[in-house]
Image (cartoon, rainbow, N blue to C red; front, side, top):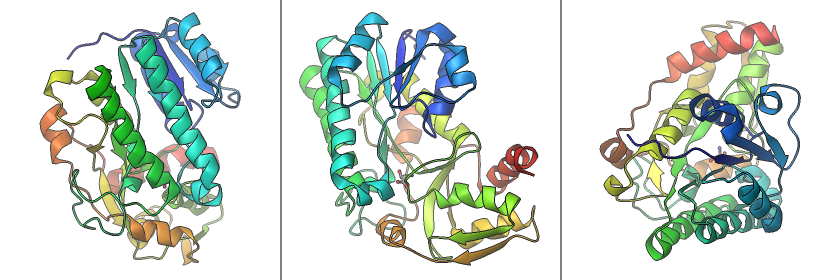
Length: 320
Ligand code: SER
């Protein structure tokens, strides 16, 4: 394991993943070496108190460049993005934020010869033509959402900067991420987080996907682990760079409900599928992460049972 990076900038630091990735990076590299940025300032809490925070709209290349220069940044974790459901409501915004933002990061990284860039992708790169079970890493990528289109393009762009300019760009295809710290926003897999809040607070949830909808998911500790492990990996051992499938768990909405009911027996879930059902139906149910396992030792730690127990344990005292 090499640890050569010391001056880090995180975009989208107030988002679902950024708000837990940033403290993890600060723990490893020191609070002052990790600059949190987001389009909006953080609420009260550790993100602002622990280390530097700067407002940054990733579409503003000038501001991004100035921050990277003034903080002497050598590594960027580019977490800012518009997710799938918001992307269907605002397709041009998704295109702009996800691709102009990424181009800004990649171009600044190229010009300033940064050490390493992390650019997350998503299971949204897959589409109805992709095998629904055990979707391979290299397969048909014909997404039907704008979010998916931007993520396929992002993977290709990242790989282009690796091959053409020798830039060290890496990324995983995140599944739906479940977490207790910061709620997600604008995604199709968000139901699997919202449901915990509602189960604990009102004991009732109206779910926007059908009970038999199965999607790949992952618990936040595994998401952070995957991100850090890939960034620690020896570049020379990586065959792909920006498109690693990583699997955590897959479950249907009704399986999640049953698991939550083991902790909250009075919990009732109703199903009222909306436009997000079509997005969910276009994605695979399970994915094959053999490359991540072989090339950088990826192993998830949480399954449905252990994730649910941990979510209830973390959220319960806060919500009840
Ligand atoms: N969680 C994302 C979404 O639902 C998928 O990457 O949009």
